[in-house]
Amino acid sequence: MQRFTEGFRGYAIALAVCLAIAGLILLGAPKGDREHIPAVDYTIDAANARNTASYQVWVPSAVPEGWVPTSSRLVTRQGTVTWRLGFATASRSHAMLAQSDEKPLADFVDRMANTERVEGTQQIDGVAWERRYRPDKNQRTLVRVLDDSVVMVTGQADWTELAQLAATLRPQPSPSATPTS
Image (spheres, rainbow, N blue to C red):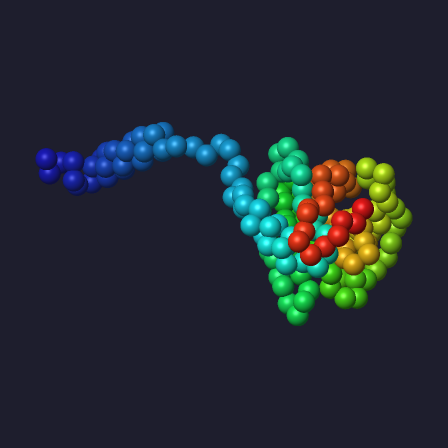
């Protein structure tokens, strides 16, 4: 037995046994071939926004296929209600729905879009949305200014994906708001 614990030959045999055991462990270990993006349930924030906002809250009627809701944050401060809902898109870009009644609305829009520059409009389901683009951040933004609030879809997703999210938005009944179209 002493022959296997001394010299190069013993070392080589011990190394081979260790590598064989490690190989067996790796072969038997489960492999994660699928990407896993943790999803959040935003329905509670949507309900709370609907119940606390003085404006009409807009919620996706259905999450587009392949999209994952990744974040939801509702902030109420000094009578202002702001809701942000983030998504990983089907192409794994980022898109976010943001809506608020923060005054002045233009300042909120400029801050969320990271630009004041309007590049035109885009029709989505018969409604004109303002388009903004900030090239250095690769950020695209669709803006819909309503009477008392603003609804935005923004992120690094392409225009088609942002329009896809905007097209799913539906006004929610609110105890304190009247519908705005």
